[in-house]
Image (cartoon, rainbow, N blue to C red; front, side, top):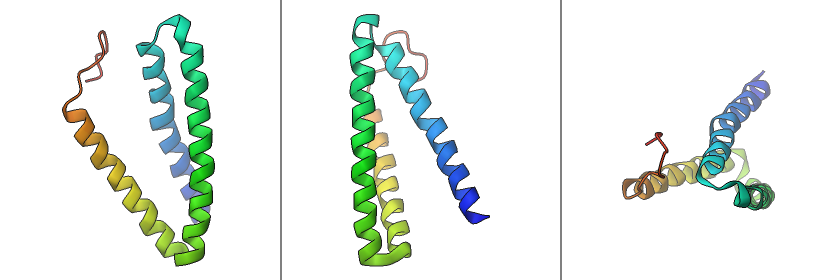
Length: 99
């Protein structure tokens, strides 16, 4: 039961982050550069996912499941804090009403 709930949360997180992020990339680029940018985005996501999986294996080996959860929560909080700091000085793209 818990595993199914966890997988549902992962799926919801994917839907609420990756899909809107891809839409923002599409809105912010011209048609000529869109294919290259989407390809680069896919490579970055795949490499980051592979590296995160390897890192999670090491963290699990060293500190177990509670350590892995704490490590993931810490990284998530750091990402949210970095996003808040970076957004503070950002200027919205022309024609983008999301900000």
